[in-house]
Image (cartoon, rainbow, N blue to C red; front, side, top):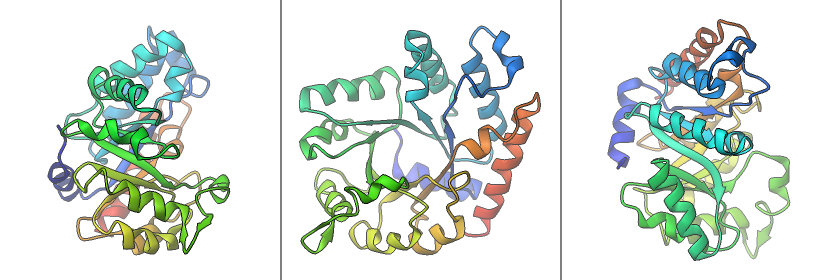
Length: 267
């Protein structure tokens, strides 16, 4: 079980609201790791050891593991098992389907992998993601306004007087609460945070797009922070691929520490 209070306490203690994204690509990890029995896990372990003092969360992008079949799933399981217990774990899987299928997805991520949370695609409606909110102490993180250009195709379309992403937020709040529901909001659209906070003033927001995608940490905090900070800023490539050499872990630590220091000044 991972409570909202525990997450807030970690943010205050570490003076950080950094989430490190493990988008671990086997073609990008340092070559010297390829001789390891499990190169992906060896890379993840070193990154976790190097960054755990500077972040409060880890987001594991399941696609990079699922692509390698059974071996990839084993690496993912080992990575989830290795994550520090004080850090909030996210399975970035973007699931959502008819009820009995979502029941199985929820079991896979919450029972088998023991993730604290999973990202959800709400396109099929509330019944397609409701099963994820039936696990006490587990969280659903719903896609609302994403950082990719294609978000204009649907998320930013108007339905009456509202954008679709506003409708998603207000509707999803009917099945989740501040204690178990977050929303994904891209850092590349900082001024829209004021709209989002009208619908979800107290919820946490998972914010990708700072770092390699060019989002501004200061702007996100300016428009999106609430009384509990209410933000998890995800950085993936800018941290984990800070170096491709044998010093990759040290470089990742330096990058994470830089972001943590910036966050400490914004809390």
